[in-house]
Length: 325
Image (cartoon, rainbow, N blue to C red; front, top):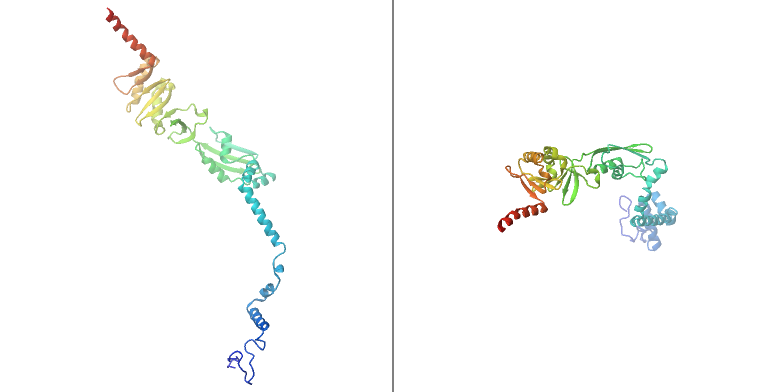
């Protein structure tokens, strides 16, 4: 023994009386049972009491009853839900009946029964509702007004919008529409544009048919110049059907089947000459298809094919008569 009362001799060495010492594991150190008992004793020294008692329980008593059944049921339910969503059946259900949360809100008396829309000028009510994502399946409780507003602002014709809820059954939409100024045709497609040339809508029906029409690349950006020409046309303004912006430099006006070719500069003065010619000579009533005003000192007209043929024939007759005499 050392000063602390510990045995410092080898395990199994003889004791002070010449006998075999007990050593670290005691007298039963040679048996398997004694080794197991010693290890269990050491394990108990380093394991908290509560932990020792729970580990000592059989596994069927440590696991809550029916946990396995619940886990299997949840797994099958998750698989069924994933299949329901992945097959498109959920989307069809929502399209026919609405979202589950909206269904519950409608059953509770919070369905959307009235939508008040102010500020409509050219859009139809159904177009506003479709843009906002509101229909008979919506509910006041679960309508996201911020999302509905963003959807409305995505419509080019709508400049500003607000959406608010009025419980229990009403939605109020206030909007301001951009003002269409003209139609712009390019590559066979017609768009509605604002005064600054911004495209705000597509030509889908005849609600914009009365607007001025400009044709050609960048014609939308020159709308202000075109409208000034229409104003300068005076009594001929109502006969102008469209204006074509040619080569990014000048305008050609379409009047009742007659093309009026204007110069790059001095276009308003050229139109004033045309107005005077029409007042004095009824030039646009002739059999012509084009009037060229690009030269400041003369007016060039192009006859229709029939008029050109008749004029050519009339010019040949005097020559033929003079030859025969």
